Length: 274
Image (tube, rainbow, N blue to C red; front, top):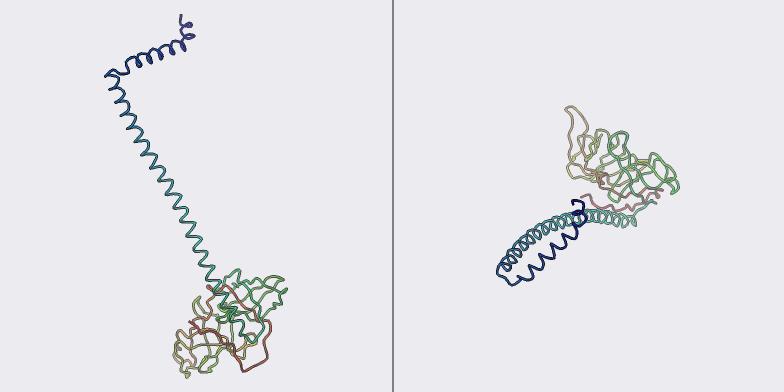
């Protein structure tokens, strides 16, 4: 009997559903059916409203996440474009200055920098294939950067002016007082100017430039401006701090002086130090 029931179960279910359908159809206009239909519609409408509300929340969350992601991408792209714009402006100024030089130069890009300390250098994307040699001067359109110390076929390393072994003969532009600018005891935002006698009327803001006694740098190239000075009790010389003319951390392009011109009365007009 039970086995027969299991066999006929689909047919019994079908007959039951058909019977219910016939009863509903026969009483479709009955007031009880209208009430059931109204309550059913109310229940279904409430459920659909809640489901739509939950769906809208999920859609809003997804949309906010997409907007945040898009905003992050746009912000990153804007920052990249600003940096590229600054570098392009710096390159335009440098190339504009290059037309006024009195010596042959080679333009280069700084591709790596570790400019502070005793063993750190700048790396340029030019080398011996482009005529670069050891001890050539490296400058920017604002002032000195350093000198070449290592060369390969396609790259070269620069000892920057903040290196502890760097030094260059220099003088105070308006006074003609001579001394030595050194990277020893310097900090990332200042250079040390030694051996200027304390009788010289040193003042803040005076410009310091390279002196013709240098065997590497041409004369009259900006090194920095005087930011402070002091002398030890009983000493005969000033210890002068300079603000570099060409900050290493913001300079992206350089010029290597390949050949110094013959001495001339015409001096390249470097822009003023801001």
